[in-house]
Picture (cartoon, one colour):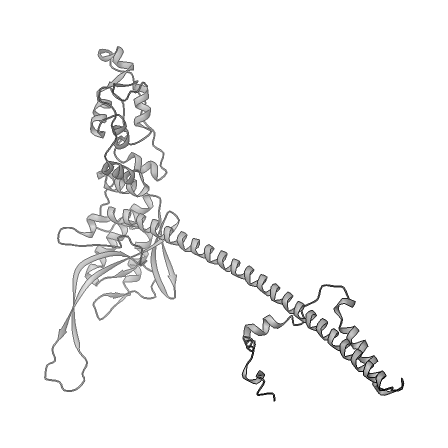
Length: 417
């Protein structure tokens, strides 16, 4: 292909055919200076097959679709135009809004929405529940035994059936919605299961390895019923309940920052927006995955910080142990020198007093001299050991008392007079 900033661009039919099947028309068209509709018209003119609607969404979910071959042009069109197609418009950059839209369309969420928006992929709720999904069929049998709560909705607690909070009149429609939704999800490669925990059964959709809980609820209204006769003091209020028949399908996982509820409205019915539900379940799975990854990342950072803190604490403990050993040796050396000074002074005084050598004082001074030798760290040239190795364990339970400040009241000269 020859490309020029201001001149025409030339592509062979084979080259355009490969490009048309390598990326969506919405992104290929602006690269060639055309819209996706204009590019598709050129492909139709030169008998170049193009991907059908929903092709890229199916590719995104892992489906393999065989593309039609590039056939020869009809005899009337053969010639120079059979091999070269000229685009007279120069390629121009797309606006920022279009770039953002294309980026969204190229993402998995964008492809998922385009797939669900395709008319051929529309989910249709059957008018009669025939050949129901296995989970729906088992739920039908269990719901026949369900009791009605005060708010007119069925009590399904403890039953291993699909998650429902609807009245008896809305059960059939809710099960038909579930049936159409479950079959559509499985057709798209997802899985639906019932998970029981703490005697409560949840309906869980497995999307891209993530579990998304769903539930169908019916809106009911409550109206206070006035007492038959005037009441005095405290009395229990009575209410009248009415089932509206308006159904909503909602996510049971909170705080995902994505749409979590689809329901009947003034202009739409839940039956008609199940494709939006499927796309929303994909968004919820992406949000759950992002939240889990964020939590795992935060946990790794917390563990790294804790490991760093622990290593720093261990270093500090080793430093404190060395400091205690050093201080112990310094005190021993100071005591040794003080004892020897004492022994020398006392011996000199005894000699000056002309005491006999068998006097008890000389035996005492000999013991003191030996004691100084035992205290002297210079006699044993080794690295001193921590004199209190259990100090760290005691400090974990009872913080050590602070060192007394210098010149405290009990150390002042006037107190010791």
